[in-house]
Image (tube, rainbow, N blue to C red; front, side, top):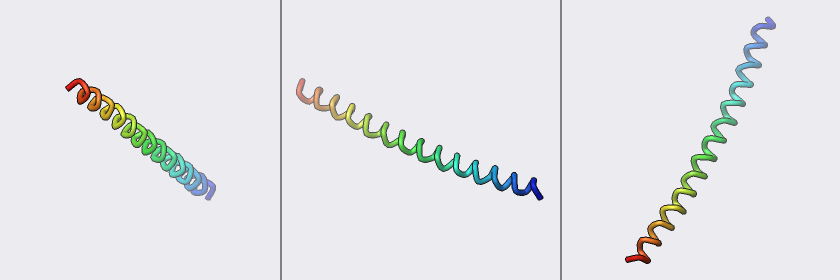
Length: 51
């Protein structure tokens, strides 16, 4: 009986870790998109001004 409880506790912990990891991955994906968009916009404007 205790083994079942331990397994269910491990599953809950792994689900929490998995959700937390997904949140962090999504945050850094979005952060990267914004950073890349700013860099591309700055590059494009620089090239446009040279033109």
